[in-house]
Length: 132
Image 1 (cartoon, helix red, strand yellow):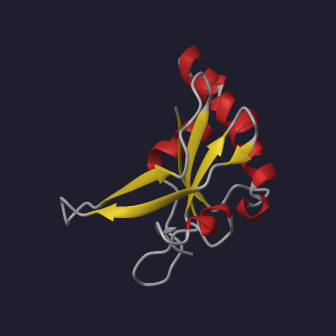
Image 2: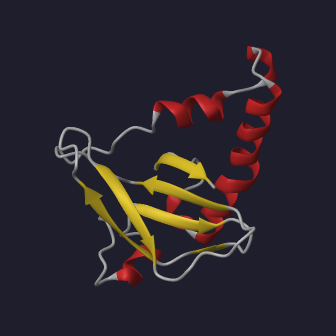
């Protein structure tokens, strides 16, 4: 797996890409390139640039999938994603948090799995996920 580069944008639509940009409403993957922003070398960020302008009034999601550490071992899901997907009414979660959890479990993740089937049924390769 890799970050899709500006000279290989087509790879952002394949299982080789660790970053996925999802148009949740369409539903489809959006071509893009990604690169490390190493302003803070201890905590590098990933910058994504869509290949074409994004549509207004559309829900998008960004996923990091199947990323491995320098040791080649699959990185675990982020703590925030793990907590969000584990929420349920029995743990006393706020209604807004439950709605967000439900939206991810019932809309975003299934949509991602439909357009990027390599992300798997159990969503175990999804390490980070957010929508905008």
